[in-house]
Image (cartoon, rainbow, N blue to C red; front, side):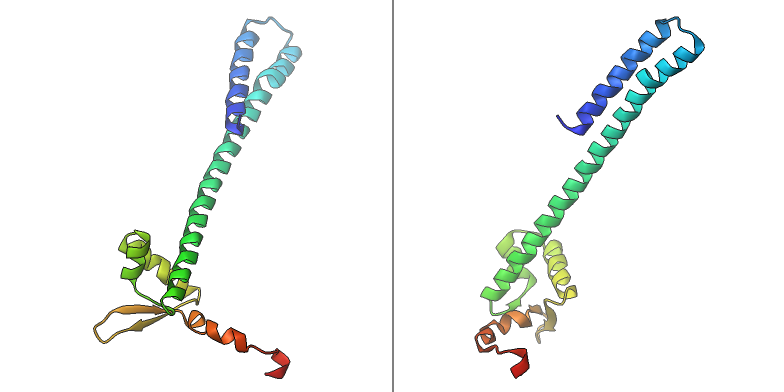
Length: 148
């Protein structure tokens, strides 16, 4: 059972206790303490548990969306590596079956993260160029920073 379920159970118990409280014939101080511990405390705890359950659910759905976006970005980088570090929106759309706007947003995000640059062909086609991926062959020639 999750937090929200326990919260609803506590509120139910609080309502049940409230009905009993109205039927009880108690001295004022005893009535106040009984009301506080048997009705207010469970209701407050139940409300808090429901709030926390909903907040966690919202955070989890946000994390899932972010994970999906990061996964798509990684797959786009793999596609760019397979295409010698150059991609167009149409290639991303056809490879991942996403709409044009989402593909543009993902490629623009990678460009904003400085993974890609924009280039334009003579016909006006925007090409996203991933310079680091184009230079991956150079990594076998790497040497110590002190030697450079």
